[in-house]
Length: 475
Image 1: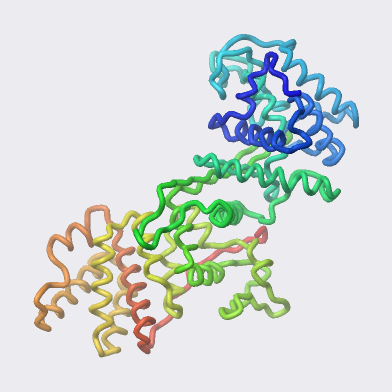
Image 2 (image 1 turned 90 degrees about the horizontal axis):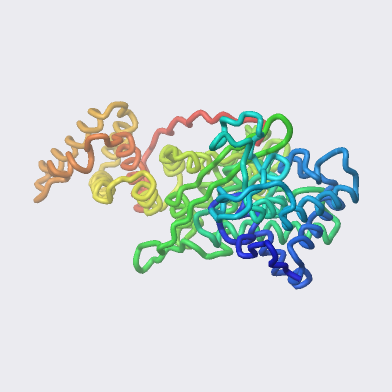
């Protein structure tokens, strides 16, 4: 029976904005939604989960809690469970030491209790009191928040050498992440196939984040692109991945963020209209040190090595330089340009990338497309080749300016009724103060290559030098 004495039931699951407290709250909510746990009290729920930690996982939650009642090496077997129940019962009944105040996470005015590395994640120790507000010996939180923390391991995953938590501004997304992990954990436990925290199939944060985005797009159907209105729906979803360990003398957290604009762009690329071309492009940029000499077979989308091949199920866990750049907010234009020389690639993807991620004006993109149309409409393929060569050779902004002005002159000499570029367009949209001229050049080259593919022109193009990509063993 769910108890209400001295426990604020609502704050066991209410969202707080704290990623760890929220994860614990979603785990509690998931467990209470299971028919066989629906009528359990919070203490009975703690007992149920404590048995999982001890009997199924061998007490291996050290990455979450240091010297807790579960991880304390002095406690064995059943004692781990009994000590855990005794501690949390003292919180629920408020017999443990504490004082009245406002909880830093929930904000409610209630009795507060000490939070350390044994019952809270990454809270620090009480050794240096000047680290905490009002010279307190550590964090003091409500019992509801501390109860939530106990459930966190059941809703997270092991990613390489640390634990991963994905949190979102969109409540439905965070809930999906935790519920999925709870479901998989309980299924593995029921099957006797688990020895600890659920392991991610990926080895690095970029792949894990974008793998989760794939799930959100497919399972939650969020951020869908509307072809008729040429716009997205109003949902803005950002993700934060906390890659952490609370173990031993080296507690650490590395935070990776995926801004809403990147999520939106990635979701756009999965529109059926563009997904096939985008997928081929992305799969070309998977890398692994054991397959340095492998060749990407574009028809089968298999990496073919000298000794063995790798299909997508195998290489999807490799490092992907494009996904890493998207996560780090670095430009992927060079990667698109290299691919686009030999392969058709929807310019709509480039246009969307430039406008929503790189903040390029739409009028700038339209003007670039106009220049590309002018160049590729010339029947002289030598002229097109010279234009490409000159653009590839432009290493300074003035070289690009001279090239575009020369095209404007050519357009005038052909008797065109209107200029390729006006003074306003030149100053405000092509070369504004603080503008990135090299992006103008790269987008123009991509637009030219795409036009060549679309009109099936045969132009002898010199290959672009591949950027240096450092590949590490841990991929």
